[in-house]
Length: 217
Image 1 (cartoon, rainbow, N blue to C red):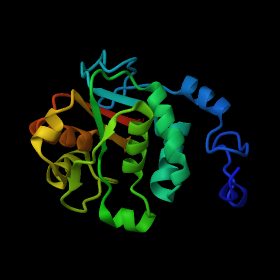
Image 2 (cartoon, one colour):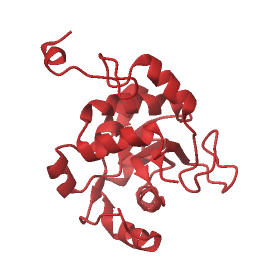
Image 3 (tube, helix red, strand yellow):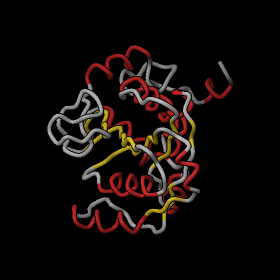
Protein backbone atom coordinates (compact mmCIF):
# COMPACT_ATOMS: atom_id res chain seq x y z
CA UNK A 1 0.00 0.00 0.00
CA UNK A 2 1.34 3.42 -0.99
CA UNK A 3 1.46 6.55 1.15
CA UNK A 4 -1.16 8.10 -1.12
CA UNK A 5 -3.50 5.18 -0.45
CA UNK A 6 -3.11 5.76 3.29
CA UNK A 7 -3.71 9.50 3.04
CA UNK A 8 -6.51 9.34 0.46
CA UNK A 9 -8.06 5.85 0.62
CA UNK A 10 -10.48 4.78 -2.10
CA UNK A 11 -13.92 3.43 -1.30
CA UNK A 12 -16.10 1.30 -3.53
CA UNK A 13 -18.73 3.49 -5.20
CA UNK A 14 -21.32 0.75 -4.71
CA UNK A 15 -20.77 -0.94 -1.33
CA UNK A 16 -18.46 1.55 0.38
CA UNK A 17 -15.73 -1.00 1.10
CA UNK A 18 -12.27 0.52 1.38
CA UNK A 19 -9.54 -0.36 -1.08
CA UNK A 20 -10.77 0.44 -4.59
CA UNK A 21 -13.10 2.71 -6.53
CA UNK A 22 -15.20 -0.33 -7.48
CA UNK A 23 -14.41 -3.61 -5.73
CA UNK A 24 -14.20 -6.93 -7.57
CA UNK A 25 -17.50 -8.21 -6.15
CA UNK A 26 -19.39 -5.06 -7.14
CA UNK A 27 -17.80 -5.09 -10.58
CA UNK A 28 -19.30 -8.54 -11.21
CA UNK A 29 -22.69 -7.47 -9.81
CA UNK A 30 -22.73 -4.30 -11.90
CA UNK A 31 -21.94 -6.23 -15.07
CA UNK A 32 -24.86 -8.60 -14.41
CA UNK A 33 -27.34 -5.80 -13.75
CA UNK A 34 -26.67 -3.52 -16.70
CA UNK A 35 -28.71 -3.42 -19.88
CA UNK A 36 -26.58 -3.29 -23.01
CA UNK A 37 -28.40 -1.22 -25.60
CA UNK A 38 -28.19 0.53 -28.95
CA UNK A 39 -26.77 4.06 -28.75
CA UNK A 40 -29.24 5.25 -31.38
CA UNK A 41 -32.63 3.87 -30.28
CA UNK A 42 -31.94 2.63 -26.74
CA UNK A 43 -33.46 -0.82 -27.31
CA UNK A 44 -31.70 -3.94 -26.08
CA UNK A 45 -28.82 -5.16 -28.23
CA UNK A 46 -26.66 -8.17 -27.37
CA UNK A 47 -23.84 -7.20 -29.73
CA UNK A 48 -23.01 -4.49 -32.22
CA UNK A 49 -26.06 -4.94 -34.45
CA UNK A 50 -29.35 -3.55 -33.15
CA UNK A 51 -32.28 -5.86 -33.98
CA UNK A 52 -34.68 -2.90 -34.02
CA UNK A 53 -33.04 -0.08 -35.99
CA UNK A 54 -30.44 -2.20 -37.80
CA UNK A 55 -27.34 -0.21 -36.88
CA UNK A 56 -24.27 -2.41 -36.52
CA UNK A 57 -21.74 -0.05 -34.96
CA UNK A 58 -23.20 1.22 -31.67
CA UNK A 59 -23.06 0.01 -28.08
CA UNK A 60 -24.17 1.55 -24.79
CA UNK A 61 -23.26 -0.15 -21.54
CA UNK A 62 -26.44 0.88 -19.75
CA UNK A 63 -28.68 3.80 -18.87
CA UNK A 64 -28.09 7.09 -17.10
CA UNK A 65 -30.44 6.22 -14.23
CA UNK A 66 -28.40 3.10 -13.39
CA UNK A 67 -25.20 2.94 -11.35
CA UNK A 68 -23.09 3.22 -14.51
CA UNK A 69 -24.74 6.57 -15.25
CA UNK A 70 -24.11 7.81 -11.72
CA UNK A 71 -20.43 6.87 -11.97
CA UNK A 72 -20.09 8.48 -15.39
CA UNK A 73 -21.64 11.68 -14.03
CA UNK A 74 -19.29 11.63 -11.02
CA UNK A 75 -16.28 11.46 -13.31
CA UNK A 76 -17.64 14.00 -15.80
CA UNK A 77 -19.05 16.64 -13.46
CA UNK A 78 -17.12 16.16 -10.22
CA UNK A 79 -13.66 15.33 -11.56
CA UNK A 80 -13.65 11.89 -9.88
CA UNK A 81 -10.68 10.74 -11.97
CA UNK A 82 -10.18 7.65 -9.76
CA UNK A 83 -13.29 6.22 -11.45
CA UNK A 84 -11.76 6.32 -14.95
CA UNK A 85 -9.93 2.99 -14.74
CA UNK A 86 -12.79 0.95 -13.17
CA UNK A 87 -15.20 2.38 -15.74
CA UNK A 88 -12.79 1.50 -18.54
CA UNK A 89 -12.44 -2.03 -17.12
CA UNK A 90 -16.22 -2.45 -17.01
CA UNK A 91 -16.53 -1.29 -20.60
CA UNK A 92 -13.68 -3.55 -21.73
CA UNK A 93 -15.45 -6.56 -20.20
CA UNK A 94 -18.90 -5.75 -21.56
CA UNK A 95 -18.41 -4.36 -25.07
CA UNK A 96 -18.57 -6.66 -28.11
CA UNK A 97 -15.31 -7.74 -29.70
CA UNK A 98 -13.62 -5.67 -32.39
CA UNK A 99 -11.44 -7.57 -34.85
CA UNK A 100 -8.13 -6.48 -36.32
CA UNK A 101 -6.00 -3.47 -35.53
CA UNK A 102 -7.88 -0.86 -33.50
CA UNK A 103 -7.32 2.71 -32.40
CA UNK A 104 -9.41 4.40 -29.71
CA UNK A 105 -10.33 8.05 -29.32
CA UNK A 106 -12.91 10.09 -27.46
CA UNK A 107 -15.38 12.85 -28.22
CA UNK A 108 -13.23 15.79 -27.04
CA UNK A 109 -14.14 17.85 -24.00
CA UNK A 110 -14.50 21.60 -24.47
CA UNK A 111 -11.64 23.72 -23.11
CA UNK A 112 -13.86 25.54 -20.61
CA UNK A 113 -14.87 22.28 -18.94
CA UNK A 114 -11.28 21.02 -18.92
CA UNK A 115 -10.23 24.15 -17.05
CA UNK A 116 -13.14 24.03 -14.61
CA UNK A 117 -12.95 20.30 -13.87
CA UNK A 118 -9.23 19.80 -14.24
CA UNK A 119 -9.72 16.64 -16.29
CA UNK A 120 -10.63 15.64 -19.85
CA UNK A 121 -12.93 12.87 -18.61
CA UNK A 122 -13.76 11.13 -21.89
CA UNK A 123 -10.17 11.16 -23.11
CA UNK A 124 -9.05 9.70 -19.78
CA UNK A 125 -11.42 6.73 -20.01
CA UNK A 126 -10.64 6.19 -23.70
CA UNK A 127 -6.89 6.07 -23.07
CA UNK A 128 -7.34 3.55 -20.25
CA UNK A 129 -9.70 1.43 -22.37
CA UNK A 130 -7.05 1.32 -25.10
CA UNK A 131 -4.39 0.21 -22.63
CA UNK A 132 -6.58 -2.52 -21.13
CA UNK A 133 -7.53 -3.90 -24.57
CA UNK A 134 -4.05 -3.58 -26.03
CA UNK A 135 -5.22 -1.09 -28.66
CA UNK A 136 -3.68 2.16 -29.88
CA UNK A 137 -4.86 5.48 -28.50
CA UNK A 138 -4.84 8.49 -30.81
CA UNK A 139 -6.93 11.54 -29.99
CA UNK A 140 -7.40 12.80 -33.55
CA UNK A 141 -10.72 14.55 -32.93
CA UNK A 142 -10.60 18.20 -31.86
CA UNK A 143 -13.12 20.89 -30.93
CA UNK A 144 -13.69 23.87 -33.21
CA UNK A 145 -16.00 25.72 -30.82
CA UNK A 146 -17.24 25.72 -27.22
CA UNK A 147 -20.89 24.81 -27.81
CA UNK A 148 -22.64 22.74 -25.11
CA UNK A 149 -25.26 20.09 -25.90
CA UNK A 150 -26.85 19.87 -22.45
CA UNK A 151 -30.37 21.25 -22.44
CA UNK A 152 -30.62 21.66 -26.21
CA UNK A 153 -33.34 20.21 -28.45
CA UNK A 154 -32.59 17.28 -30.75
CA UNK A 155 -32.57 19.60 -33.76
CA UNK A 156 -30.22 22.07 -32.05
CA UNK A 157 -27.88 19.26 -30.97
CA UNK A 158 -27.54 18.11 -34.58
CA UNK A 159 -26.88 21.66 -35.80
CA UNK A 160 -24.22 22.26 -33.14
CA UNK A 161 -22.52 18.91 -33.65
CA UNK A 162 -22.01 19.62 -37.37
CA UNK A 163 -19.98 22.73 -36.53
CA UNK A 164 -18.21 21.63 -33.36
CA UNK A 165 -15.62 19.03 -34.42
CA UNK A 166 -12.78 18.36 -36.84
CA UNK A 167 -10.21 15.63 -37.47
CA UNK A 168 -6.72 16.81 -36.54
CA UNK A 169 -4.52 14.31 -38.32
CA UNK A 170 -3.60 12.71 -41.64
CA UNK A 171 -5.94 10.34 -43.47
CA UNK A 172 -3.32 7.59 -43.73
CA UNK A 173 -3.14 7.45 -39.92
CA UNK A 174 -6.75 6.30 -39.77
CA UNK A 175 -6.56 4.13 -42.88
CA UNK A 176 -3.81 2.10 -41.24
CA UNK A 177 -6.30 0.62 -38.75
CA UNK A 178 -9.10 -1.86 -39.31
CA UNK A 179 -11.38 0.02 -36.94
CA UNK A 180 -11.76 3.10 -34.76
CA UNK A 181 -13.53 2.84 -31.40
CA UNK A 182 -15.11 6.22 -30.70
CA UNK A 183 -15.95 6.74 -27.02
CA UNK A 184 -18.21 9.13 -25.12
CA UNK A 185 -19.40 8.85 -21.54
CA UNK A 186 -23.07 9.84 -21.82
CA UNK A 187 -25.37 10.29 -24.82
CA UNK A 188 -28.93 11.52 -25.28
CA UNK A 189 -29.73 11.73 -29.00
CA UNK A 190 -26.45 10.37 -30.39
CA UNK A 191 -25.98 13.50 -32.55
CA UNK A 192 -22.43 14.14 -31.38
CA UNK A 193 -21.33 10.55 -31.93
CA UNK A 194 -23.01 10.51 -35.36
CA UNK A 195 -21.17 13.61 -36.52
CA UNK A 196 -17.79 12.53 -35.15
CA UNK A 197 -18.16 9.11 -36.79
CA UNK A 198 -18.96 10.77 -40.14
CA UNK A 199 -15.87 12.95 -39.88
CA UNK A 200 -13.66 9.97 -39.08
CA UNK A 201 -15.02 7.92 -41.98
CA UNK A 202 -14.53 10.88 -44.34
CA UNK A 203 -10.94 11.15 -43.09
CA UNK A 204 -10.15 7.54 -43.97
CA UNK A 205 -11.45 5.33 -41.14
CA UNK A 206 -12.54 1.94 -42.50
CA UNK A 207 -15.01 1.26 -39.68
CA UNK A 208 -16.11 3.33 -36.68
CA UNK A 209 -17.67 1.70 -33.62
CA UNK A 210 -19.48 4.12 -31.28
CA UNK A 211 -19.48 3.20 -27.58
CA UNK A 212 -20.81 4.99 -24.52
CA UNK A 213 -21.10 4.15 -20.85
CA UNK A 214 -24.67 5.35 -20.42
CA UNK A 215 -27.63 6.52 -22.48
CA UNK A 216 -30.45 8.68 -21.18
CA UNK A 217 -33.86 7.00 -21.50
